[in-house]
Image (tube, rainbow, N blue to C red; front, side):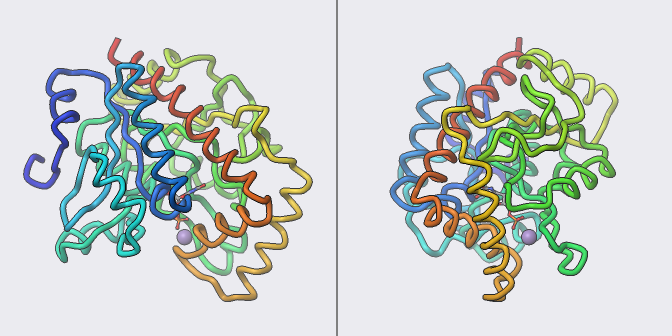
Length: 302
Ligand code: PSU
Ligand code: MN
């Protein structure tokens, strides 16, 4: 796979020496956060991993090359440039062939992490089934990727703007177990409890690593979803948040916002409506997910 993946020196070294590596996505940097909060978060995550003796591998497409591990300039570029496309599974071959730039979603990052031999991928929230999917068919390719790349994705649940009950059903159909980190309840990104249950509760990174190992022995193609609730002190007020979501879902229909533009639009509007509180919450949950992901990744090697 050497010919299609460009590893950063650090990531190449770490993989060669069988050290612990954690994959990170870049859509969250390019389209999930405004500048400069996005570059600050990206740098904080790199630092957090390195301080735990783990090599971070942020994944993106730059000038038609798949980058596994970004340096500071490359992170800046992804954070600032308006030329960076949101890259999911369907976009990869075209962006590579045309020599374009792309920030990889959960789906595309999973695929690349798998090709690179990285088993643990940490993000904020996954995409899923949108409300009204029975009419729009808007179901994120993240769910397809979860069914076909056998790595673990550590997240704070799916975005609360999604239809979580339907998202769960699709994951079940695709054979993807949903684990709850020290919880029985499915987290809903900005909120600890969606009101739905996870499939299984686990207590620590060791348990997660054992599940990944068995998943491999079974030669399963599917990945594993580990959901971690946002730290209590940073969660948003559920009632206020539900009201905001209801309003914004109406806006999306009214302004005819469609397809891959929906998620960035909603995130941006949620930020305004919560007066920036959602940004703080988002940063907190990603860092918390990384702490858990690092634990899982270390146990996998141990
Ligand atoms: N959730 C967030 N912020 C994000 C995303 C999800 O809170 O930026 C991104 C992730 O990269 C995810 C993608 O893979 O949105 C899903 O987009 P879509 O629904 O268009 O597949
Ligand atoms: Mn979509």
